[in-house]
Length: 347
Image (cartoon, rainbow, N blue to C red; front, side, top):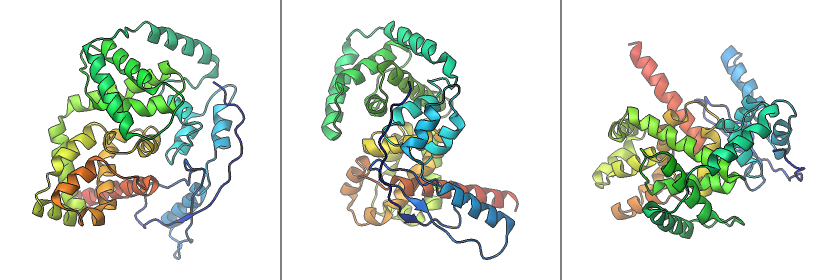
């Protein structure tokens, strides 16, 4: 699907500083409100080769990625450069092109333009053949969608409840081994809001559900939570101790946050921004625990001011977050953990 011409948007620049441990170089990206941020830094004082390379890379990464630049890639007549889309998308995708970019990042749409029409037609046929007849599960989906929409204040001209209901029902009818669970609504909603064609949204939803199922079939959620708690104690010891003193059971939150990739806790806008990064990197599900840690670190001071009963409610419905900052912090945390492990191995 070729993009139509997109109006030029105003760009603003906001300087942003990063720590010396910054590993994951940040492209300043055009935010959903239309503003841009840019990375500013000074050349390294000592002519260290590695430091100079990092400085040059940071300067390259400071370029803003506009809707028009995405359009240039997406409108290619022969071949869509998916690697370039990945490079751009790590740092956020404008909502005008988000759905189309996701299709390429998730492998739903082929990069070979000569196959575009035939693959789209086949996907539509495949989706239409899936049973969508209402059943007992449909009532549960409908109820959860209604509750979800009451919490989500995003307007859309589309029939969101019906789309979510159809996609989840189709998935469960098509994958009999999978039982419906309420978080499917949270995992489906970003695709319904972002992806234009219902069949494409279905195949995106199928992709992420299958990815999560495959991952947690090889390791239990209990093991994942235990590993996360070890990282939590290591990375944010003060907050970990505070939770212990206040008898806050963070394991319940961690289980949901890990198993459903924070889809129940983050606002829809924040979740879609997070998925821009996740779909652009090859190991997003392995990276996710570090993002959860970065969220806790970002909210540490506020959490320490809350009572025990308030903490659980706060974490279950997170406020709007500075996603760029937290994503960058998550990569910093992972880098520091890996460096520490390497150092320990060499002892």
